[in-house]
Length: 367
Image (cartoon, rainbow, N blue to C red; front, top):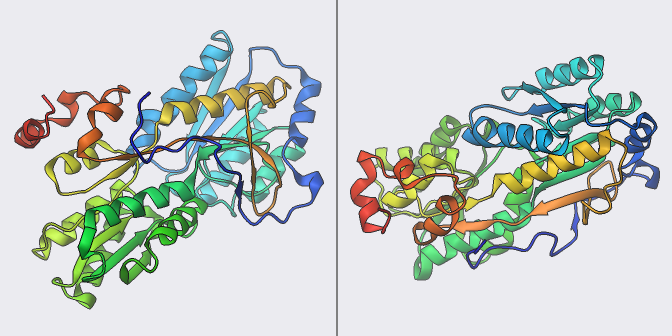
């Protein structure tokens, strides 16, 4: 698969997140419990996703994981699914239910990485291994798959600098980070700051509650009021959903031609990129991440080693050297839509180029 210049080889660097656990806390303990079961293909995988406002979870992650689990178990494995709808307490209750129902392994994309810790411990105590999916959950997890999140932030920061060019220090940049309860958001923010600090003037910065577009919209309106609409030259947005709320606030204030970043290559974000309303997104191919989670989950449930699957090691605040798979990302702009989301079958030209975007699509060579 051809990647743009910002594509990063998975596992190019070791990732460390201020580990402080003891050696015996490292991933793999629950795998030993699972080993005694010696399960065959008739396994049950508990899948817990964090919310349903972001399009990716229901459209991509869930069906991709279900498909891969079926493939790896000759159609005998099943996935039991729950969505927490951005409620950490509800997600903990969902874990309890799955433990009670004796699932063989859990895949958890945590609403709140710290709040899930006790539930992960409960699963371990019952011999149920846990794969942390997309977000690095705390507690004795056995495996982890995500993207190189600091690199995501760096990719966004580099794209914003490119878009600003000589205007980088001519005004103020607003930074719209993700939710403070999501460890990924902190890593995106760190990566972006590594690139932007000293090269732009950050006028306002927000950690956006629950990643909600309406909260990003309100924050952006407050930033415009505080900084003045003539002084804002660019906006770092950590994802596409928030970018939509930000762009609405910019338009309401009569602000145009301000580059806005994003992430997730959501359809609405891709359409805004085509039209010029949004400058870029980070394309994270969901299939490799979902496949990795499914493969690690099936191996753990069947008592198999992860050595041949997980080539990386990641430290969480509670667990050292978690077997991990990190997936590459790509900076998505108007120039490489064909070579990324269309080529990979995420969207068709017809999906993107609806009546509202036909003229912009034609101009971008999407026809």
